[in-house]
Length: 436
Image (cartoon, rainbow, N blue to C red; front, side, top):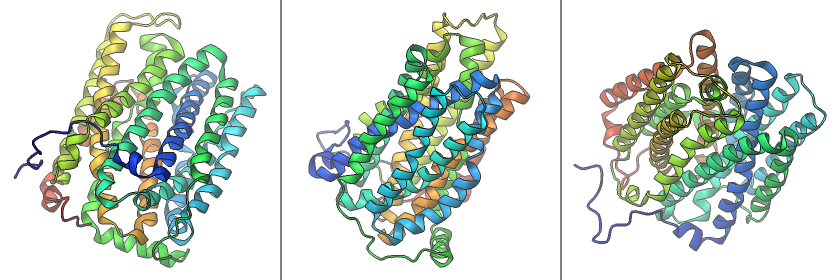
């Protein structure tokens, strides 16, 4: 059987915007989330550039995420139970208020010209930790703002949102750092954060259908559900593999400084490239709503992502073997275009896999479990990239810039082949009869 059902006579290739049209609350939530996320990404890129400028090593950049791993694990475990126990709007308001301390502190450090690295690590760790709780609450809220039939469109819109955040934020971050410096860049993030907070405050009360108790028993119940949900567990496992071994972001400051030239602007373009792929694939996501064999489609998309990572690594290897003279005021444009194109493929394939994964999780999981399930998955979404940054940063520091992407692509390929052989039920997952 084909992975895609027979299409209606008039094919719909473009993004379904019905959730934005039919739900004003979702529309405000989505728009403000884009604005707040752009600020978060802007600061993330600026922090990477600043830490690399202060330290001169990719290992220090990797530690921006590495230090957040342990607290994020704790929040990922306990945060989902909090979301399932209380009004999810109130949880978001409190968590976002705490999270605001991070960009405020980072801006203050930069205005004061603090050069020690540890204060920046403290504030980025706070932001990442509370972000795990925010992500769990946002995921659990989406199915309560729209009808179930619109969940694939919501997943695609979430991809578009992430793409806009990852495209505009890094590009804007690179340009702002080059034009006005770190302090003003972080200050702009504060304004965008407040726009994001507006969308949260405008939500109606969203009380869980069945309230969970906060504590070890609720967490154990969530883990038992995930243990029995083989399809969802497999989908999360694919994401872990792609995050841990398919990220190149920790390498980009060094690629720009050592191989390509162009300074912060080059780094911003490279980081934004994968987000361009996310946006393009999201805009053309109309046919994805008709895919029934979503597990099989996810495996194919993840394989395409691994191919893009391998191409990126091969290009970095080739460029490193050629004579080059990186200059902050001059960029090697043909190689920049080639590397950016590979990252566009990576972003597009990862987003397509994410659309299927999110739809599966929101369709197959009961409402009273969504917070805890997303709490664990948000741990993957937030901690996974940090693991990937640590892997890429330290492997590159120990060897060469091309080692992490080539090695990572091989590992991802092995994982996908193993899943395809060992999880036949996942390959046959039917969107019309969702089984967790």
